[in-house]
Length: 355
Image (cartoon, rainbow, N blue to C red; front, side, top):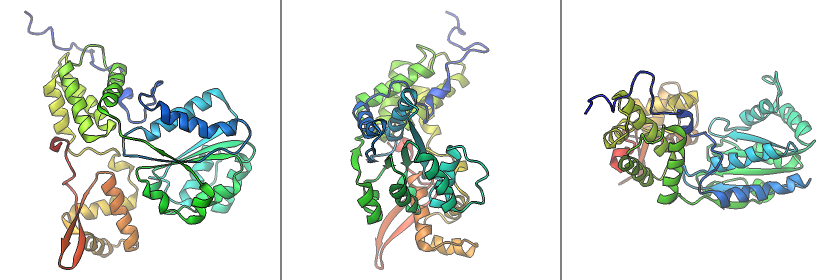
């Protein structure tokens, strides 16, 4: 028996294309979300008939296909009709009216908008969109600092559907009553994937991304189990890529249990978004936490202001929440003689090896 037959040769790879393991990749067939996609389509349908569309408030846990399902429907809409425009805004980055309107203008093809007032920007948006119909998708709305733009859109854009996407149903009750009364959305809950659905999704991506036969069945099942325990499909995609890379590093033609174990160990500090995606103010707050890990929020805020930070305590606390949701930090509520307080830590995020 040859000692080298199971080793990769120069130029060989276990991967067909790693793009299929990306969080933003849109498969032609979206597994397990047929009913939810139908709800999106039904909300859009009146726009194709020249009427106002329906609004949806979409909520559910992270990593279970809310954004992917919505984008999948919009892609089909673009292929079927040019009568309805779609505008997608991720509110993680565009989190104020002053950022949302420029983003929409850019998507509509406007240039040289840097020095225009928000009222001027919305005038451009209104002039263009009121000539037809539009679907607005505002993703991660729980990250918004203000929602004034929503009120303006609801009042002055005629034929539209608005889809608001979030992890939290409570985000709706926290909105201004004027917006809620005008929005009047239908609620669309995305339940977590079950084990069979997670397995089906990961098999689909595996078959797209890898050369056939390189995954040992036992190792793939172990990876699926890890993904089921964390309840986030994106972690499964990340682990597949890491395990494949670990196998290639060993010049192995198979991806086994050892590579899956190494992948899990390598992503103990797994983040959905890289630190480079954070804005400057969030990076500053993250640095404060890193240098003062294990302290109370109030103490961190004092350190923040002492180092030249300028924002209210409420705004600072909101950024702590953002960083916690992004898994950059962890928070723990503790009770004491003076009441409840929150301890913030930089490096003690829950590890995949803890599951």
